Amino acid sequence: MAFVQGPEIWLNQLGVSVPCVVKTDRPAMLDEAHRVFINYETYYLADAEALATFRAAPWRFTGKVTDPVSNVRFEPDGDSPRRTHKGRLFYFATAEHAETFAREPGAYATPVVPYAGRM
Image 1 (cartoon, rainbow, N blue to C red):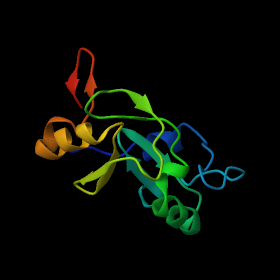
Image 2 (tube, one colour; image 1 turned 135 degrees about the vertical axis):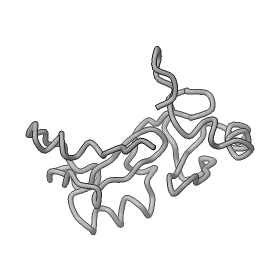
Image 3 (tube, helix red, strand yellow; image 1 turned 120 degrees about the vertical axis):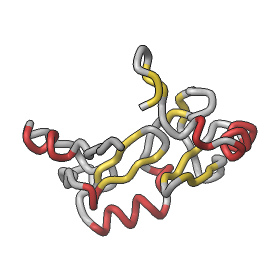
């Protein structure tokens, strides 16, 4: 069994600072409580209020994401097809991709890294 640790410890040790995607004038809190995964992307928020705003309509703040079926980068909107797998929200470029994902989510939920395989 492998233990996977979030990147926050390393980001904090390196002194990395990223802006909150909701409150863009504030730095995000780099910890698990303020982290959200959407598709293959990771987002950090400044506080509980920003987290709630983000969770209510993530597509307003994500920018481009990667469709896990086609690997096409696209900008989701409020009408984009979506599925949830193991607590993670996934947006899709097409309804067909969402249905493909729904049939076999484990095949698409983690990205393929060239020369390394699935993460």
